[in-house]
Image (cartoon, rainbow, N blue to C red; front, side):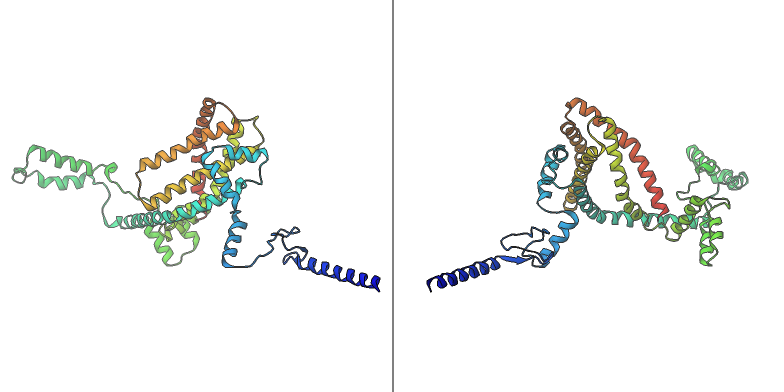
Length: 375
């Protein structure tokens, strides 16, 4: 009997242990595998154990998944701003889980910058649209105003009454000379100015558009030849579209192309770094440096825009703040590539000169052309 009692007690103890274990086990809602309830995250898939969906959680997950906006951002942002080149150096050395990925850092800060700058570009776009509309009005009304230079017969006709001594007797010699100079200037075509000249008859094109004329006739009205190639045809088509809209939205189109252009400019900056530091790592290492440096540039511009929203600061202060980004580059290059300050200053100066004088103007020209073709 005692033996049977011991067996019964042992069985009850096992059941209690099993029940206790079951109480400490939970099933992941994502992968449906069991794990200890004390775990904050599922060891199989990584989802949070108590993942109650609230508005706050939904917003945080969206930001975190899209921008990786977590503790790594703040851990990366401080050295990015206050320790030039150190963050890139640590990331390349292998400390990659501690810090935000350079491309994610660049993406997040650039999105913030373009969001802030979009409010300013609206004002620029509105003002520029007004100027263009006024230009079209001036161009279309020039036929009602005689802008052509006066010929010799017209000048002689005007000057004849002025030869009357009685009429001219009240004028001094200086006033007579001034009158003569005005008539001389009126006969010179170079002195007849028209600020807006679109190179085609705007009224004729408006008439063709009004009667819904074939595209071929409209293209001929703006000066396209029959043997024009594909790109020329596309250019003239966009010119007609530009005319119909009176130039409206062209600034916005240029602004929309800036992010794409920057994704091209950034690798070129890394390529120049590779040329200047040929034996200092792979191209990917220079690309990491470029991502972090451009992130710093966007950070500075965000600060400038943000402060100017609150209080208008003088332009010379804005210029000094932007100039500080060059000295940041010098120290970043010095820390990242581990060279002396003087060598880093020379190479940074050469790099900046080549980039600003050659690469950026070419990129702007390409950006303007693409913006117009995609307008």
